[in-house]
Image (cartoon, rainbow, N blue to C red; front, side, top):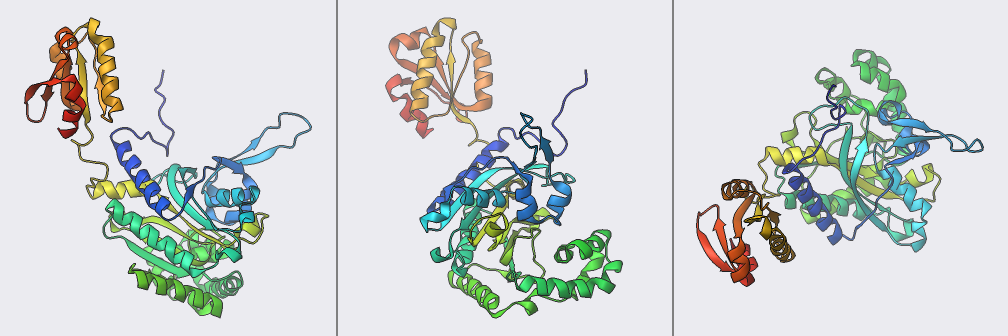
Length: 432
């Protein structure tokens, strides 16, 4: 029989790599908590219309990349429903905000999530069909200050803090304003007109986008197209006074708190719900696909999916790419190879000592130590071989040790072997 393997575009995350994933997630939780965010967990699949109406039917995500199926009704009286594995999480968070009437509190809702998303696209380095995001959203009624440019700046400052605390060096923040719901149609029309003669000379994808979603032409990465695209109209020339003032206030707040940035007039992001501020944090260590995370403001998303007016801003961190960046930089955020070792390997000497060795292991674990329990059937040589591979120290626990309360401890790094009272064992192991 042929071997069954992970589906293309998915993969298994195994120890010790998962230590790095856990460290990243723990850092995110710690930073977000300091900024007043609480965790939300939404379903992995949603009604397909949530993404069609929220993300946009003409986006690549909805048009080409979603995993969608018809959910068979359980009874003849039920209507079949189209369901989709979530390709992004912002729409689901806003749906939950509406469904649970979180706006009725009159307060800003600051919510973060950690979990898998799904898109059927061509797998490549750092890009998978099941990928992982760490994201957050700030959403609420206008009376709570949800439209304020201060919210945008606070999000960006928090992300700079997060990357700094992870030890990511050399990141770049690019941002732009894509205008209000009134600004964008004027710009799109000017862009569409300018593309009439230019589009036939661009790549195949841009020729299609020029018809379906002209803004996406600005995101083209084809080298030969760049000069022509740079000559197209700029969004900044179509912003109204409110949008200009909003963006200027965001930049001013970033200047005040010392967060470096550059304005990229071509930054539009790939989702239809974005308004005003859009942004990306990039890193040179990722090559052409250099975005670590991105996001933006979505002041009309709640209304687009049937909810009340609830301006918001959020972001998603590509955890897969972030891991690659940290690995390439030789990050020690999850500890070095020695730090990945367990504290101690408890080796029972003989089958008769196994139960007592389990009790000892339980004592050490309750004292906060990372412990592996051996097997009484192992010869002493095998216990040392196994212990040396996975732990910093080994504790030998035989009949004499059980009677005397004195155990033998060997530090694998120094080779030093000592006798230790069982009552003092946990304290001594913590120091080694």
